[in-house]
Amino acid sequence: MAYEIERKFLLASDSWRSAVYKTLHIKQAYLCNTDKASLRVRTSNEKAYISSKTMTRDIRRHEFEYPIPLHDAEFMIEFMCQGSAIIKSRHLVKVGRHVWEIDEFFGDNSGLIVAEIELGHETEDFLRPEWLGNEVSSDVRYFNMMLVNNPFNNWTT
Image (cartoon, rainbow, N blue to C red; front, side, top):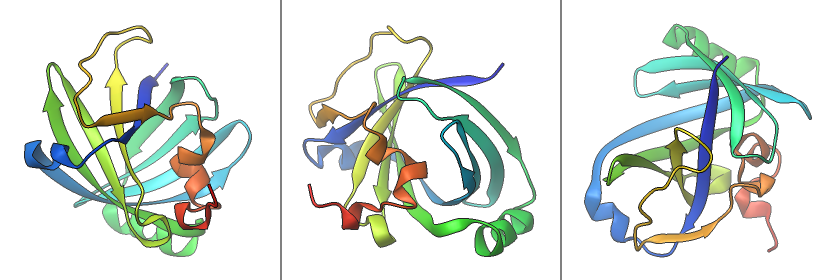
């Protein structure tokens, strides 16, 4: 069974920008969100995926992701998904043996930037770069599936 172990952080500075080695342009939207799971469609550069993730505050979630034709994904995002699409640039930064994914959001979530790291197990050690801020892994407001209905620009705190 597939799963991901992911921790999410805010950023303390922009000094990570000089270490970016690749940037992906992502558009994603949700076919459905329930209290148990989400069903997402994503395009990333010229590739597309459909995926499902369990809804939990734990850093370990079951995730299933499958490639689909790009034109199918674009149609689903445009005509079948709820809310507005999430648009972001994902900047990849290598620190030690890990790659950090730094998501810079646009549109209704403009101004939000978070750093994510995927781990092999929940207690795995990793280097914490100086640009890393507070951890928000268990704060559901920062889950992409939640940003569809409660975008960052609507937050009051």
